[in-house]
Image 1 (cartoon, one colour):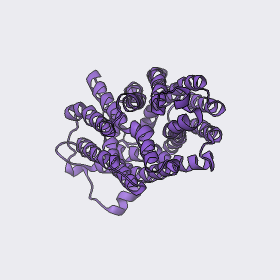
Image 2 (cartoon, one colour):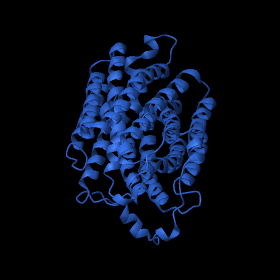
Image 3 (tube, rainbow, N blue to C red):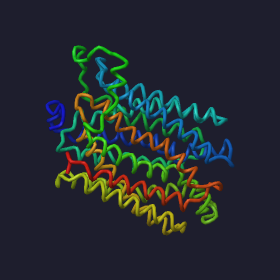
Image 4 (tube, one colour):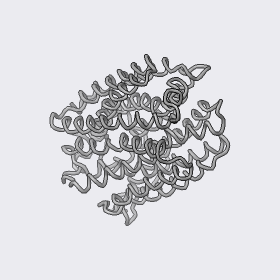
Length: 418
């Protein structure tokens, strides 16, 4: 039996809750993914075209370090929040408003240092919001619905990526319009969920006195005492490093290796990325739903998660072997299938191996390090694997494939979930 089993939610969530939760997740990713995949690479190139890969790596590294710290603190803080507006809701609102201000800072950046500062502000505020949003899952969703709800929540990444890529790469050209659009997506996507969320205030009597040393010590989860949690963390971390590499550097692959503008005269590389994201999203969504629902019915998470990681690795091997547009498009379908299934099932798996239901926000903050630390590690790996010319994508994608496969293997020793 998991610790704090009695605190686990038992009441099934309704369709309107799932719909609003999904919309909030989609809004968050519509605001987040285009920033990483399109706007930051373009901004880095505008500041220094020759050194764009290095600037992007620096920006991603410092942003990810701040995101990791923010994730840990935000989850733990929301666990202890006694506001009459609830534990999670206040931080969603504050974080979303702060992220919108950070977009302005990034848009007006003229130097690498200014860009790094804007991204640090964004990561701090966005993760304040997102940590609270993710913590609602163990707060409200019972175990036998986790796969279903996780399947819907996993739609946030592919739909957000596709909508953002099409909107930013296709329809919107002016920089101001692009940043205004992602800001609006975050605020409008969150609004219905935040307004209607049942987030009862935490009684002050349930909150122990605050001691900084104990608070910091509590962020550590002993892998010997909670091995399932450790394996789940490691598996997610390795796979997400691989996904981060592809998501953050695919635009440069299209520019420098595929040479998309020459292949399709009159079209920008951002448009090619939008096509890949759209095609991938269709299959991502299908496989996310199938994986989430079937893992509920069959009561098996590990098989689906491992198979998905293996699929991701296979697609990346194809990326490494060919820059042909048709082959790349087909491989992106496979990539979408694997990413969709993995993200859906992994969310459900992770929330079933949390060490403490009472401290779910804090523990999910630790898990979310597996989301943010890859953004810090990926740039260093990218600079190393791309080589002095910054275009050795053969080694780059093979390395990503190895990471995805390793992540899938790390999930298999988990015992508390089948």
